[in-house]
Image (cartoon, rainbow, N blue to C red; front, side):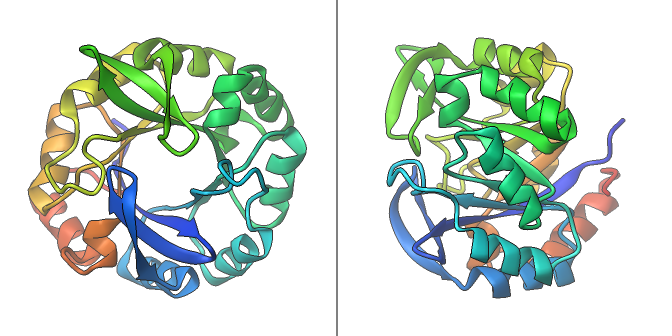
Length: 250
């Protein structure tokens, strides 16, 4: 069994960490470099940086900020937002990212997954999938969760894995920022359908949500933001709780 990962997420807009509910109503959550350092000190297994407005604003990810965060931490660091080419991915890795996360550009042109995997290795490629039910079926949303597509979430995850993705970051839009718990059903359906690791995101509100996720699904990682940024739950307390309940952690 793969050991489980606890992964804080820094959603970045205008150089600041922000967080909302269902991808809306964003509020400031602090300086990303300071938060990144805090999470390392508290025992985070990995860190994810998502430049959430890069695609909508049709610009590249903030390389200088990525470089400053990478220089301040010593844990695996995934960066996403505005990645449209292999060159974009390479530039982020050169700036200190260990992995890149692609979403909209991969949906528009799935071959990008293969191209980046061929250049950097599949272990460097995370495909982020934002999902929400439409007429009773989970569908893929792009452009920061603002645009629905006809793609089935399950089928897209399978295609992404076939194209060379090293892992899937699955975010349940309807759970995002609500604290109502992870989407266990969708998460497990994806986990069982593909041979690569799945990180679950959206809905963490208390430590029990993480335990339930790891006990009832095959997800290997749990990503959260609000619960950590605003002090509702401290990482050391969460990891102690999970270890006490026999969850193998990194």
